[in-house]
Image (spheres, rainbow, N blue to C red):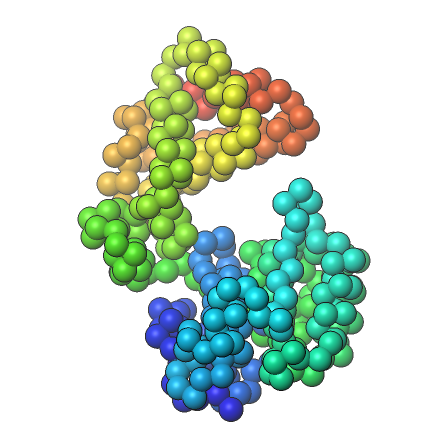
Length: 335
């Protein structure tokens, strides 16, 4: 039986609404279901919540759960708990195949080493192949005793409806700015910097953390500002592309940063972000954010998508970047 109190680690999630409170109440009463589907955009805390839930189920403390101090909690945090299985897509693969699901199912079917729950966390569940999903569906249709699944997915539309229907779905929403500020300040970030990051992140805690404290992320954003948005003449394109030709290993991150910046401009125009976040952008892009049409934004997003396809098709990175930079400059020159 779960205790009536739950650890402070969960308290920040209360702003997620009624479904979260149902989840907590279920855990407190020991009435949880065998499968949960945590969904929402990247960076809103799906994996963190799944870990908190899993640790709560394993915790053997008589006080607040998870206590973070008992043997089970310690083993969970050290990733050595024998009753926990994390299934992840391999970095060099686009999907999770059926063999991985079969291995996971075999593990879940074994006895509990510590006499409690067994936990399975499937990250990027939407990348399960159709065969893998059908195989996993059989496991969900015949629930294993004392096994709890946590599926993490940004896009439930790629999952079989029959899988979704057999899970308790909890969609996480963007965080409120005051919560993000408090989380950043708890990590030692100055209040002024925390407020700027929270404003710019538009409810995404992971992005706020990166903007406020990740040196590599900040360096990449500076690179994009200086080598993409600050370009105002065609004569600069070749010079900059020559500098960027050795950045192939970071090409995905660079395209992500460019796309995120365009998205930021769009959020300003729609009123979701304050115009103060435009301070890093040249005047032409500040004007773009205030006056561009929906078609203008769509055009830029399409050009970034084209660059992604070219990269995936092994088109020379320097050529890909030159083409994208030329398209972006063409749009900037209108403003």
